[in-house]
Length: 353
Image (cartoon, rainbow, N blue to C red):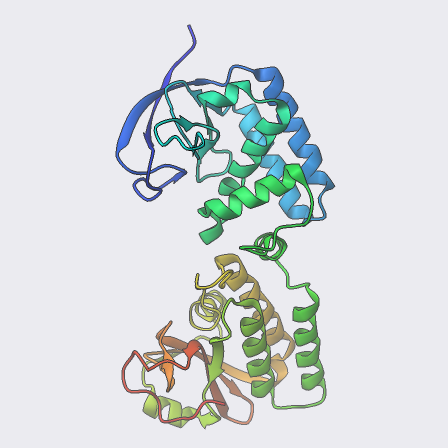
């Protein structure tokens, strides 16, 4: 006798239970069974692997996608729900009383089980592959796009149907690049990086160069031009101590320096079509740290500055990173949202650059 498993499914709203892609609303206990048509399932998995490898998408994305398929296959994590009347349902034309179940649901974790609707037992390999392709993104992405059904469905459809890489409502290639490429290799980013290095080689002010690098990269990668990295104009350490007494020297604390550069300077946010993801925040932090090392001969000290705000900006973080050069000048850098009323305590009297 085949084993039966119990799961709680939520069939209407997507927000009732965390950890599920699809569903919501009032929970209903149903029984699930192993997916019966193993031959078609194997054909669907092989077809999907072939289609993924044929795309021009990032190699690390392809590897993660196929690894997830292999994990689900080895763990036998494909099920169907005999009494599930609809997942991603459609209705018969003109009839609001009859629903057609044509999808699946899954969990937000690597190799998470996929639960097909009853209708999926009759799918051919291509149709089944398309359904699986729309669930795997929920396993391999992090952040807002792991939970976005529109993104997962459009990407999964492209993988099987082909055509142009989706750009609406989300730029799939850019999102994949940001998620799976841990270095900034795109042309726009490299242009900024190379210009910053030239400025440093031309003996420009190192604090200005770091401002250019952080400001341009953060603005370039984000969803809204209103999100920027800004800085005070040059001040001295004495002025910093007077105006912002809650500062801590972190020059010889590399882990803390990395942690607070990410928290205070390259702050993640989800607004707009792409925002700054956790992964992108990590990439920007890594790039900035690499250049701090390259420019170390002109840098004296680093400080975490708490309770730090800039004028005419909306607060998205309450801290900044202060960098002191060999001449005793200090810039304090932080992420802000510009052109908004200040939401924090009275702002610093020091102008931004």
